[in-house]
Amino acid sequence: MTTYPARPIGPTVLKELRATDDAGRPMIPFADDEGGAPLRCCLRRSEPGEQIALVSYVPLRRWAAETGAEPGAYDEQGPVFIHAGECGGPDGDGRPFAEAHRTVRRYSAEGHILGGELVEDPEGFDSAFQNAFDDPDVALVHVRAVEYGCFLYEVRRDTYEVRRDGEVRRDSRD
Image (cartoon, rainbow, N blue to C red; front, side):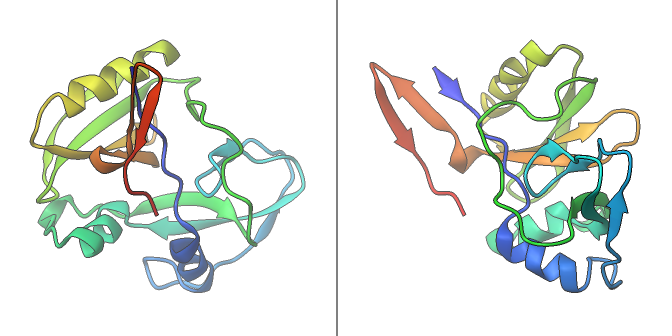
């Protein structure tokens, strides 16, 4: 059985985004009075009263800087919610933000879109990830909200776990 861990925005990138986001703007924290914002730092919804911020983030550019890819026009910038201060990251290995339709968008090692799959049922994510990574040209996928197109999290080829006969192999992670 193969599992595909959701990757939050990493601590080093969060520190940078809290200083200046990917659009060059300073972070402006605010109290989330209602709660429910999808936090990309810990992959959960905010609680009422938490200090959060909405920042611009370019996930493919960040990945490309690590790998040497050149995504060109696929280098999308968009808004993401994060905690305004440090947080402990995700609490579990569940499938975050699975309560609505999502798109699993596939990218090559060059950073070009190779297609995608609409996931309409929370049980459909593992199948969508398997379909993506069955293609040897797929290096990573982004899970995005259908209604707004916002980036939610990524899954990388080099970070999934393979379980066979009770053995677990963990590939490199940040």
